[in-house]
Length: 475
Ligand code: URA
Image (spheres, rainbow, N blue to C red):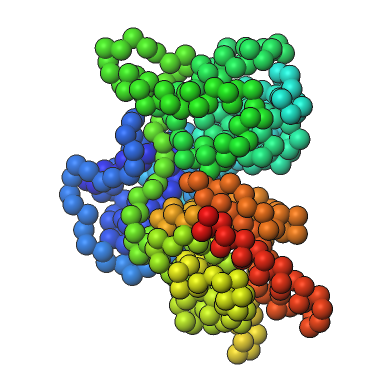
């Protein structure tokens, strides 16, 4: 028996990675036992037979099936991981399985997916916010309590962000807290109904609530920083508490796991570890894992991966949209017409291309075939979302001082937001790991401009943006 322990109840990525490995090794579902760790991190296989050597070349799962499987992984049923693996295992030899609603496994999967979707709809409809005053910058602040049936809290956060963009809000559930401050979504620990102010609360109460629910065992500094750069903390009354709580977190966590310690967190200790998946220590390892991932959006894409190119410790990183036809064939980013323009502009801005790391938000070429030609097709938001995590891992490994987003796709992939390039370009913004982010246009945009004065002006602005990135890198 092979036992797989996932990092937490919502460790969907852990399930996907483990399932891919198991499928490649053709491990039958009866030989796998799925668990969720009570503490400690990561994903591991333990106790039992060693994993058999890899056998299958590739793993395929229909997009439609994958969508249902991912939904079901949010269900509370402890059998969901096993059911999902059994189905994807069967799907390797039964490619039409997902079209057979009479199949008992599919019937069960559909039933569970339906109840997760119903729960999501309920949460969308029935969350009720209470006002708790205004933040220092005058934004109204709201809090709500909700008890979902399944592990959906983090999954619904984008819905509330899009629906209630103009206010600061926090939704507390027993399992997780999600918050929006007008700039970034954050996830944190869960709480109790009694923790949420029943009447409109004063700020002091609000702060003490926030301090009380701040369970250090759930502290995800990286995720928190990724979602909410420190410069935004000032907008929230509870933000004043964050630095001290963060500093104290390690000590408090040690104290919590020490059985002799009397300190009990003010809320139920859900003991869910951070699901941080920073497992890769080298770029090649990361790209191999991405090549082996079975869940990437395959429809309309080349199956070749185009990895980033350049020194793995480059101080300057450029992120484009996706490889084009020529990049797909060469296996390298920015070697076609857009790449040549980028080369020219870099040279004009005294940026050394060889010293920079160049990559793309989406790592495969998306196209439509027209006769002999493969015509570029824009990646969807889902495509960008899929590769976002991988891009961030790439950034983490290279650890550049300055990241340059070339165009809207890259800007979205790097910030998680749809940004207007004209309004955000040419500014150095604080970014992850103490780096700076600079947004500019994509070189293809310049290629599309009609010849003439306008094109020249735009090109010069682009060169100025690159010069700014070089100066920031140097200084
Ligand atoms: N456009 C991009 O965004 N990336 C490439 O690699 C080539 C063209």
